[in-house]
Amino acid sequence: MNKHFALIEDTEEKPATFTKVGPGCYAFTTDGDPNSGVIIGETSVLIVDAQPTPAAAQKVMDCVRSVTDKPIKYVVLTHYHAVRSLGASAYEASDIITSDLTKRLIAKRGEADWAAQNSRFPRLFKDGGDIPGLTWPTLSFASSMSLDLGGREVRLMHLGRGHTMGDVVVWVPGSGVLFAGDLVENKAACYCGDAHLADWPRALERIAAFRPKAIVPGRGNAVVGSTEVADAMAETRDFIVTLRETAADCVDAGKGLKDTFVSVKQVMDGRFGAYALYDQFMPFNVARAYDEALGLDRPQTWTPERDEDLWDALYGAADPAPEPELTLVEDGPDALPETPRTEPDKHSVSATADEAGAELDPVLELDDTQIIFESAEQTDLDAEGPARESRTPALSGA
Image (cartoon, rainbow, N blue to C red; front, side):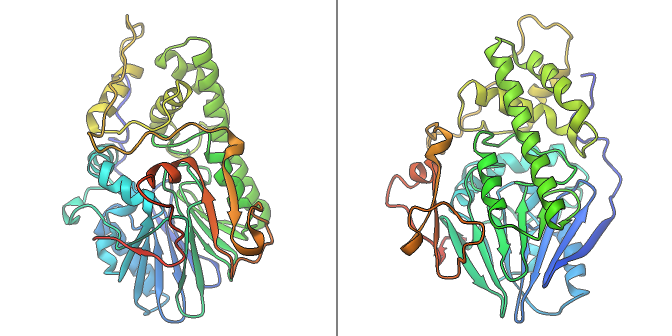
């Protein structure tokens, strides 16, 4: 290989900042490493995304204890990736919460993702010996649920597929702050290896409908101010759309994966090349965009072996003949069902009671309204029974 695989040369610790972004809301951020969020109420604390290891989570805990001694009651995982979830045990929270879809992804892909990300991010997992195992939710929900931290309401919502199939955003209406996970990045490359690129822009539109005053992204500094929020979301959308459309054009032209990679980078390098983790993520991003353009709706499972095969295919011999093909990694007989492809207008946002069937209004008061996001993946994964409406969380096995 004429490129070092992933982040094996990334050995320097990055300084972290702990910033208040709204009443009771804080952002723990680093330069390109995974962010965490903190929400403090009158009686308890909620953590958004747990960090890769318990040792890394302890740094977040130290920041929390610098501003409050209230107990940490909840840890919310915005999605299943190991860099977000495996530090959860350090918080000793009463409950760990995910979407139902993320719970399914942990079961189907958690072990493989842990192995792959441990290889990709050796610095982040250098203290990984303290990880007790996969992080399992104690509560999960289908579309939305609300929590009370004591005088501070927090809403958890699955707004559709994007960075993964099961992404959750955390909205604090009284503070105007939204914790977006990796659905939004700030001057950092989006990781799209497990993405649904056609759906991701719709999730961003639904986030924008809340008109947040501040957003804590998955990576990069917290974004405060309506103009700054709009800019960060527009840049994230442009990254996703440019990647998807350029790869689709290459597939339409009959190009193989390696030539598609070269073409996509030629288009994107000038605009996005300085973003954190851009070079490291682009092989995975183009591989997923290439698959989606070929009609593969469900992302393939990443493993260390598949990572290495991809890196060799893209950075190996200049003119391989024939061009290396990636091996489809199956999840086994009980794999997540294939999700039917849908046209954009077939994803709808609806609300119960008086708002039934209406699109989400940016200024809609949602205190007494349950939002149900009807999407192909929810219908498919709930095929064994009716879709659940989850303001009250469904207990799930730890």
